[in-house]
Image (cartoon, rainbow, N blue to C red; front, side):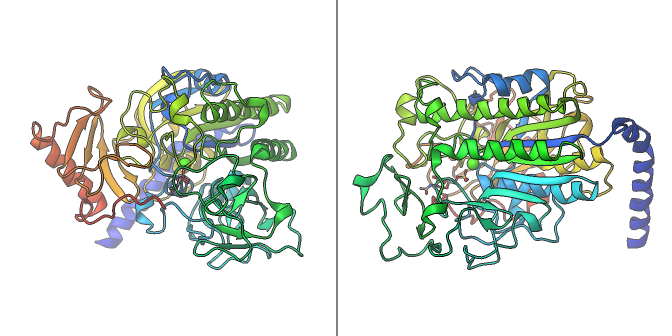
Length: 516
Ligand code: NG6
Ligand code: CA
């Protein structure tokens, strides 16, 4: 029986590749297109002006949205960073990996080096591959010595080149790491990092708030670096420490350099922008530009970066040979731990668009993302209401580049991403700080979860309730009308399908939101 099944699969896949071959050859006639994934951090659906009635203007991201395919139902896999990034790179649901939750800066690498990833797949297809920017998927195999070569990391899961921050801008170590080595490290001033204890002589925000240029509101009272206290403890590496206000330019110049150096071969660049994640520290050039304080200014800076990447591609004559995918890792948050006036100055802006919730939430704004594919001369500008997820990117890029590899839970939605079809995915499981729910067509089901309905620290509705919730997001994008009682058949169908993917225990016993 098993053999018969395998034979059928084998024939089916041979048939599949035969059918696809002529088209693929046509598509890649000249050479394989370069691929750039631009991945924002905590940028909401409504933060991009092409998407909503927000009041921040993002002309460069809009250029991608209006000149490419703008997806209105594009999703991250999770409403926090690490799980979404894991899912993006591996094409696998993050809840399949127990370690895929918000990681401390000292966490070991959570991607199995044997696992298929986007860069690994593309490398096999002749691509040079790089990551520049935020990583947050762990480094090393535990107890990293930051003063030696750090491995495994991005270079061991498929990236030929890496220039990264280990975790987040608000977590130590606050240094850049290039191909596994801390940049500008002075061997006489070794770095030590701990998420458990403070080091003798270390200056923390908890003890010295008077030294801070930006005060914390919750958490973030560890080591002070550049006048901002962080999560975790670090000593040493004084010369290697980043200056937050320069970070955006640093990553941009590395990304542009990479594009220029590799313009003569197919390349894949995963550009992980750090904005508008906290601490929001736009370069002085952007301060005051949005009128909404540092969060708005950081988005203006981020948008400018996107424009600079487009400019570099244009200058090198690569725009028509480069597929750009733009999205964000999770929904928006205003106060995420620093007193930067994001709440006070938001002034009518709607980072969450028409949706409910935000970062950390099971509600729609947690995972509904700006999601754009842009390829000059190849993707006809348009708007697509097809449902697409970031976990579909791996398999779709495999189809684009002629790879036979397919991974995990993703679908091949190449034609959808290229604007040739509206046939997106039917359903998906979504995740939020260890909890999961199910989305199918216009319907969303959220199982019962313990825990606060609204997070006190970030003031976001988390989606927790005692009973199952059911929403029709087409009729009710703001998820205000719970139809669980009115539509018991639909609810049961959703629960059944959800449990068939996720397991029967999915709604129970999952831990409450912890903001560590
Ligand atoms: C939380 C942090 C938050 C942010 C988040 C990760 C506290 C109180 N909150 O634990 O500031 O760093 O983790 O964000 O420490 S993410 O976008 O990388 O998932
Ligand atoms: Ca994030």
